[in-house]
Image 1 (cartoon, rainbow, N blue to C red):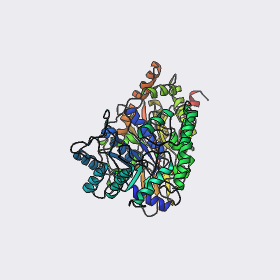
Image 2 (cartoon, rainbow, N blue to C red):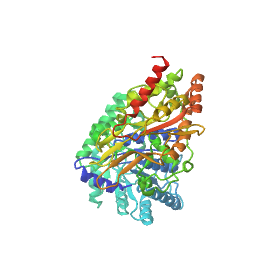
Image 3 (cartoon, rainbow, N blue to C red):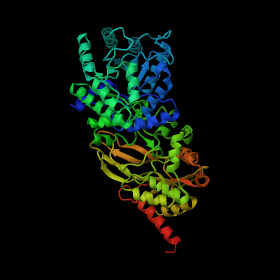
Image 4 (cartoon, rainbow, N blue to C red):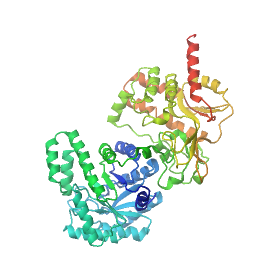
Amino acid sequence: MPKITDKVAAWREQNPGKTPFSFEYFPPKTEAGVRNLTARMEKMGQMRPMWIDVTWGAGGSTADTTLSLCETAMDVTGLDVLMHLTCTNVTIDTTRQVLQRCKEKGLCNILALRGDPPANASEWTATEGGFAHAVDLVRFIRKEFGDYFCIGVAAYPEGHIDAESFDKDLRYYKEKVDAGADFGVTQLFYDPNLYFEFLRKSHAIGVPKSFDVFPGIMPIQSYAGFKRMTGLCKTFVPKAIDEALELIKDNENAVKEYGIEQAVDMCKELMKGGAPGLHLYTLNLEKSATAICEKLGLVDETVKMMKEYPFNRSTGTRGVESTRPIFWAQRTKSYVERTKGWNEFPDGRFGKRDEKTFKEPQLTAIAEDAAKKLSNEWSFSDEAGLSALFAEFLTPGSVVTQLPWCAEKPGLEMVGIRNQLMEMCKAGMLTINSQARVNGALSTDLVYGWGPAGGVVYQKAYVEFFCSPAMLQTLQEHFSKKKDVEWMAISKNGDMKTCANGVGQVTAVTWGVFKGSEIQQPTVVDASSFRAWKDEAFALWDMFLDVSQNEDQKRIVTNIADSWYLVNVVDNNFLSGDLFKGMVDLTIAKTAKRHGA
């Protein structure tokens, strides 16, 4: 992971005149909340924020969750992370342990803070054997870890609420800079003049003008929340904002829309005045932060669509990993969790792995509100209705927004094969993963491209689905005549079937050719991983059972999970193969024969 200061410097050189942005999140209290936040972070990460940061709960109450979220953000979403670290309820030894864990994971950006008092405490007090001030934490990090960490500190345009005076707080801020801090992030404020005045006064006492201070922007999300937060932080609120909110305080949507426009106007002033970037306090919400960035023109839609790699490569210690099995394409977090013990990836490649080296899948319970929504989405009356449901998932704009194996609807990469996949679903081949063949698309192609500009990428046609034993028998006969096709099938109890010529140890299904580097092979198919994936793939059928109240639906799903096969098919003819048309034609011919046509 790069240091934030290095990343910002590179950004300025490559994007003159543009303003970077970053997002802040806080650790949720429930497992369901953590799952939802992880998905939101991944989605918002497509906007390419400069970094994201995760707060450290009052009194260190969310320390483990914070660390876990940071590691997930790095390994699953491939984002650069700034982790908050406070002095509250910690000793020097525990802080050393946390920082050592960060270093081992490749996390090198820390926001060093004093922190808020623990819950139910009226005031902040130092822990015995700990730190009295944030500056002590900064000095400790520098003494113990040298230049490894990039250290951010808090800046208070109105002074800290516990400070004796603004001037004394400003001098204390300079101490943090002198102790080795690399950049600052401000507390929330609603008057841009306060930010610029803070900078002017800090420069006057010796803080270098080259020291970046990122203004913290908290969009107004609700009237009550705004009043509570500004009251708690004793934040100055311009009269115009108070008057505007007073007129709409009972209209939640109007308040939110006003909050977006107010933040946009303030950010424009900050950008015009030379702010080095914008740091948005999201409150774990997506709409306002996304709208602000879009209205400011900070999101490059073309860049947003470009992929550095077919999967999100880790910004931490897993960053060397350059090859993964395609089975987990829709479930990256699960793959990372199941391979956490794999500390070495030979030359970044997916090595020879036995299925036993994968950890057991960890499937979490569905939250009550999500279960109710999914119960409505996943309604069907018979096996044909279930097939139609899988086809509906592939239809843009349909009510079916996810399946157990796919948290989000497929994107543009499915355009060329969507109709054929839908026909397969209706015929009883319930697809959960696929890709079209690609014979030499430019790496900058907005649909299939990935990697650095100037490269060429390729894909073999691939599809993975569940089908009945009878359908599998039909497919076996069909594929026996296709010399370029490899396939594997496995049942819940482990009954494995493969094509007559067997399946190679590892088959690359995606690769790219780039100037000055070896051929990259980021996604592969291999038998060992397929057997490991099988347990998870079949277990995910239980999600239907968890949300359904209909006994007929449960019976159908249970029968499928217990008796059907999970199948994956690779067409090695990436030049002119037509895997999907052949499978659709097969089902049409079978149907016609059954009806005597």
